[in-house]
Amino acid sequence: MKSLVVIAFLAVTYFLYGFYINQYEVSVIPKQLAIEHASSYYDYKGALNIHTDLSSGSAPASFVITSAKLANLDFMMFTDVNMFNVPTTFESYHGNLLVFSAGKYSYLDARLIYYSLTQESIGNTLGEAQVKLADLLSQKTGASKDTLTILAHPYKAGYNWNGDIPTGLDGFELWNQKSLSNRAWGESKLSVIWSLLIYPFNPRLSLLRLYTEPTDEVALFDKLSTQRKIVAYAGTEASARAIPLANYLVRFPSYKRTFEVMSNHILLKSELTGSFNSDRVKVFNALKNGNSYLALDMLGDPKGFVATVEDKEGHSFLMGSEVKLTKGMHLRVKLPAEPKDFFEIVIYRNGESVARINKTETTFPISEAGTYRVQVRVSPMLPLPDAKKWITWIYTNPFYIKP
Image (cartoon, rainbow, N blue to C red; front, side, top):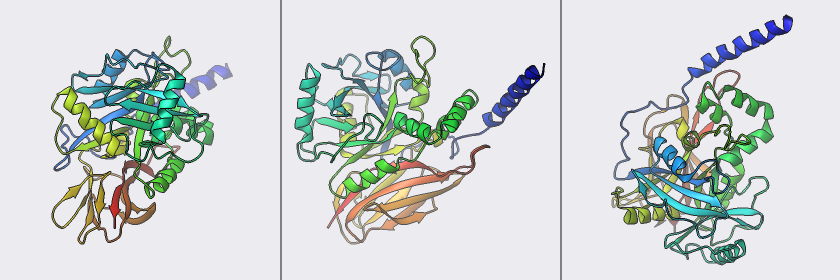
């Protein structure tokens, strides 16, 4: 009898707490029905590192595409593992969603994402793929104009990169959802279990609690960007297979939910038109050149955010640009709205913080050459048993200011 009373008490307490956290709004900015692009630029968001049931995913490509459309993505890139002669059946527009078919390949102890704009084959076997990748990695920075080579999860246990980062690599995943979740498990298993328990009541809060700052990846990013051009990416690692036998039980977390956590936002000077061939090149070039920023979208839609370097002649330069230093040059940053929680815009030069601003729009004078990037942090009050927590909402790719 006592056992039944205890179980009933715990069940009631659990559901009452669930009702409490169900009221918590994760977003740090007001939700808007119509969100405007940043002035002079067009903001499009997309997901990279996505698996279907052709490799480690739990659903066919058609299902994943539907999930991406429900998550309001503008583009996505399939990266099934060790797929040779990648099928391009789905590489096209699906409604307003632009789909790329790429691949993710084993290389040494790591995994590399490879995409060819000319649809050049990576090879027919893993050996041929590795020879092709070795050739690409040995080239000078930016030498290959028609391929995109990204190091996935550089510090994920069992798949980490050892040694120097090759010059032929376009960039690496600063954020990788599965890597961050694994890190959270290593730091506190109890906290991760608690996140799973509250998932039915507030999925966004549950996933937000798993977020940990990618300190090692940021340190690598700052180190490399002072030496050469490098691009940071966000990888969803979407497979919907966190639960064993997901194919037969439940896809968890769902593809749609995974796509809503974080994404890559590219900024274009002209809008996408719906023409697959021209739009594919636009998106590819923006991703390759680093005309983009990474956002934790579950904290709020960042569309309308912009960071540009401007000179006194009125010229404006996007993230990823290499610009010669001139008098009167400044870095302009604008948020889409004022966060309801405490926030700060942090400006870095060569990996060192040089300014912290608590305004939605700011200009920072650039008087020295160097590599500049912007980070936007917020500090929301999370429900009990948590408290205030600093969380990065936005990472920009660098501006390279030359002497």
